[in-house]
Image (cartoon, rainbow, N blue to C red; front, side):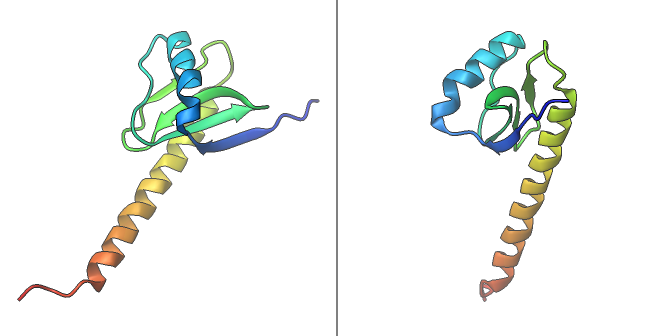
Length: 96
């Protein structure tokens, strides 16, 4: 049994090269907009666009569960942002 560290985080500009590389391996385009990454022991295995759920993943690694996990997290982010926008809108005074 090995200890493998899973990290889920938001992509930054510094991840652009790694995303392009992963997309090339997956024969796909890199996801755009806000992107979540799944790294195993600091190696990028999968990425998902928060807004669309579009995913890329390393086809040579067992990454399907990571994509599902990233999509779940992206959905939670979208739900949280929607809830915050709704709460903010309720605080604004109504136009007469």
